Picture 1 (spheres, rainbow, N blue to C red):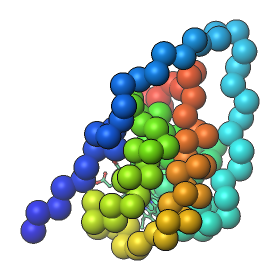
Picture 2 (picture 1 turned 90 degrees about the horizontal axis):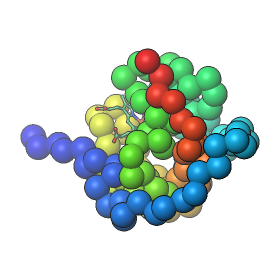
Picture 3 (picture 1 turned 120 degrees about the horizontal axis):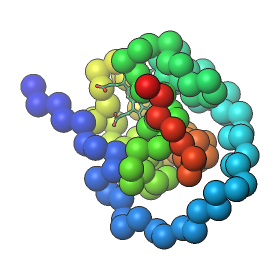
Length: 116
Ligand code: HEC
């Protein structure tokens, strides 16, 4: 069976040039919505310190900080449920997709340093 996982960044538009302000640290992300915590938090690290309960599941922070990821690419990936890895055996309604992508993109940071 062919089961390809589309790269999250595939639909990303050309990166916007945003002037980085090196001196102001970014504020901490908001806490995750309870749906995200309940539905995704069993496998994924959805909030600091971003250590996934399931080591195969990337932390939401690392997903959000991949090059080229935007809210639109996250949304597109989540809507395409047939791209999901086998472990993620569920469908999300459009409202849930909106909720997850809105939260996930708050984890994208200019000063992101990937974990070793
Ligand atoms: C039962 C465990 C499990 C649950 C629950 C789960 N995931 Fe995952 N998810 C995984 C695993 C494992 C991977 C990595 C699969 C791989 O890399 O092949 C993954 C990968 C991902 C990815 C990254 C895809 C990529 O391009 O690498 C995203 C985004 C994601 N999950 C979102 C979610 C969201 C949103 C939820 C909750 C609505 C959720 N997951 C719930 C196990 C889970």
